[in-house]
Image 1 (cartoon, protein in one colour):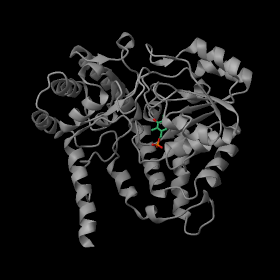
Image 2 (tube, rainbow, N blue to C red):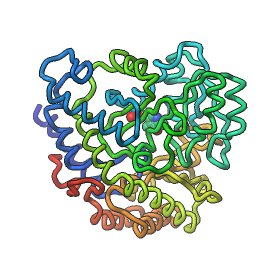
Image 3 (cartoon, rainbow, N blue to C red):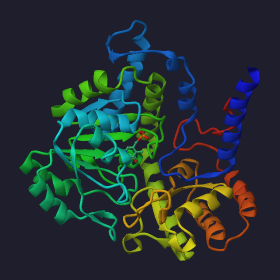
Image 4 (cartoon, rainbow, N blue to C red):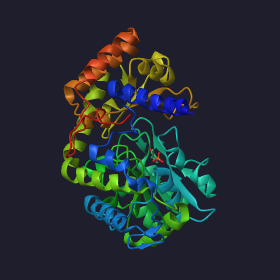
Length: 420
Ligand SMILES: *Cc1c(COP(=O)(O)O)cnc(C)c1O
């Protein structure tokens, strides 16, 4: 039996070794500070605390109350939110709760389709389907990589949705929340903004401010550009707080993950202190990487409008064999990215593109000159077809100086102190 355990430990060690030496560029990931890692391994991970701060169904929660109370207080302050719920255990969980809270079966909602950037939880085979909603897709302009504003306003008035769901997984430019608000009011629609990818940018006052632009609810994961533990958060207007809270607990969560809530509270403090600097550096790194890849001969989307305003860069790699082939070649060189569908794609397995995220490299301290190097390493694998093993050695050499987590109070080596 011991060897079965050792096998798992060994895989975890090998995984750490891979990430210590690789360039992690999956746009939905990040790395946490030392304080957060300690909390994730703490006794909080063993406990139950159903209920609310000061009103639990279990004994032994007095310190958990302190932690959850602070997480809520800091999130209200950082995001200037009227109400906060820190219990959803993932972004999809937050979307399930919110869509169940604000719609009834048969209602019409508007959201982006998956090939146009929407998340699977916005699609008919996920939450809208389970809730029996009629899904109407936003009119999308692939050249601008954004929702077509005039057509959207027309369609809101015509279709009269109950809920308008903004936000995306391929998310280069801010969505037209402000532009939708008047039409939404006219037909009585609620606006939900799924900020899973961009919450760290919003925390740093970049990208957009959905609550000020007219969103009733913001749902989000807490581990993408927001560099916290895996989990989720809901920010909302006071007017919908009771429906939202009930749909979370007891609706769709029994025990929330208390070690993650503690890690979230710490990350909120980190973002209060360092968030603006961090978000600005992410945006500037993404633009720099896009520009260098473009100059190196890649078909980077949206050159005419500065490529991106987020942490993401989208590249059409059909001329190099498509997203699947390119992503696998880059993995051999220790550059970890994902294939991605664009609006003209039919197959999620063989899409045209790749999506690159710079948020984790930014948190590890990379700036403009490293973006130049990263672009060049990508070019050597994908365009020049150089031996991936050779490029891998240079990736490892570049990564060596970027193993400390920045924008936090305990800038330590992210890999050295891990048990595995
Ligand atoms: C990643 C993502 C989610 C889901 O988040 P999980 O935390 O993985 O459940 C929801 N919405 C969007 C737009 C996303 O990109």
